[in-house]
Length: 382
Image (cartoon, rainbow, N blue to C red; front, side, top):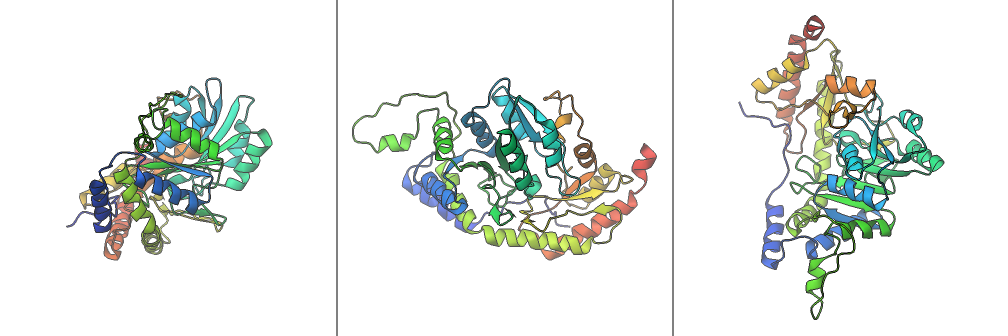
């Protein structure tokens, strides 16, 4: 029986042709013609002051903290449920991440939890568009404005999603995107920082290239320009190879997102009415990018046994995502009960644009059988 992977990047002949053009140009490194074209496209499509192409979303979050002046003694409120990159970004600059619990229906950060965590040391908030669903930015921005805080959007999973008509990634003063292999638009690895204020983008671009700016630009200056290191920087550049792939992918985002949405709708139909599963909820004021499709298992179902059953049939699956406050690296003295509960009961099932209707049907059928076969086992184990 053919395997059905959990994730699969939709890369093909058009992307290969774009890479061949970069090879022919002689400039495969970062901040060259393809990178500049990608940044201009992102800035125009997202209607932001600047866009900086970088090596990954983690780098974008790090650069955002630096550009916003975050440092030792500061606290940054971060969404607890999700990949813990925002908390790590705060730690990179010596700040303390403070974990905010999430809503049980959307899995996005709960604005009420955020409001309760604001202290005189709070510098800002990093919200997460959890597995592709935008957070509650109207309420979050009100909190940020009331207390004079910055608001950063971690839109790593949400390329193509919307909130109240606005594009995910441009819902806060700084947005961070990911183009990892499981995202809606992918170059294998990659990211971008989107900034309403061009000065934030300028700072991020300089720091992303060791603090000296574009070597490509210097090479086109008549004479012999000598770089001057004005800031402590990093090598966070995105290669022109990846930038060329992404320009093709961005042109396909409507097609790829439509297919993911169709997969989600089919799962919704096939799994409807199953008492042992709770399906994702999408509020009416936003759309989902469907980076991941997560179901929440009834507390009586043994998740590990279900995963074993799916994998035995060649069906990929995953644990869902992380409750950041439980990770030893942060040594957080907090409790986030909703996030913790979701982290122990959610299961990710195959979601990507290459899935066929027959494959989705097979996944749903196998999942139903598995949860019924292993219902009650978690309760007995307790």
